Figure (tube, rainbow, N blue to C red):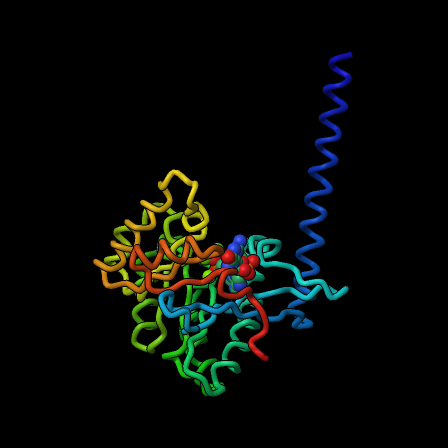
Length: 266
Ligand code: C2E
Ligand code: MG
Ligand code: MG
Ligand code: MG
């Protein structure tokens, strides 16, 4: 009896695994089709100077437009896109739109994301610069957000890419700072312009919290100052968080408190 039940369970598990891998295959085929049809849009979330709350730039975030018009969030497909190598094609569609946006008048910057594999791939930086130049985009108004893992695989190559970016005027930020493997040594070694404090630290800051997130944020901000790095806090949702970030000396912020990702057009 117990054995039969066990076997039954095992079969259910098997079925689920099969269904899951079918879904992944579906997703990959769907993403491939979406790339061919360029079924993506870019939404822009404001980044503000936190003390004056003026908009200094925007982060470009990709949305997949499903055939029924729904917008699919990156967390649903970035991982698969990275595993299958399809993310690079998605990124280039995003960058093309950003290049067009940057070619228009304006003095705020646009920040783009790149997956680690893409950042480390052969001609990434040359192609990015060429695309921006072709569109007439001002490289000084372009920023690129990388995660720590982009620096880990091959740090010689990463260094080379970062130097090329710096020479071109494109600024590099370390995204989701604090979630990786303690990036402290990277911060000194690589030519970075700034860090983005991960949302998990900011969301832990609340009046009735135990203060540990606040202590961490204070330490991160102090460290960014010591290393002459610009500091952007991600995921700011409350006035309390904003006030504590100002007190910590964090220069810039991004989050639902200031604006959700949306179209830049009025
Ligand atoms: P990220 O680069 O850390 O982007 C910030 C994410 O936080 C965005 O999620 C944004 O919508 C969300 N967010 C902003 N403010 C708040 C807030 O106050 N509260 C909360 N709860 N969330 C907030 P999104 O747009 O879903 O993007 C998720 C991730 O997908 C990004 O994280 C980035 O790693 C990746 N991604 C987005 N666009 C691209 C792209 O074009 N290429 C690549 N390779 N990755 C991308
Ligand atoms: Mg980002
Ligand atoms: Mg982030
Ligand atoms: Mg992220």
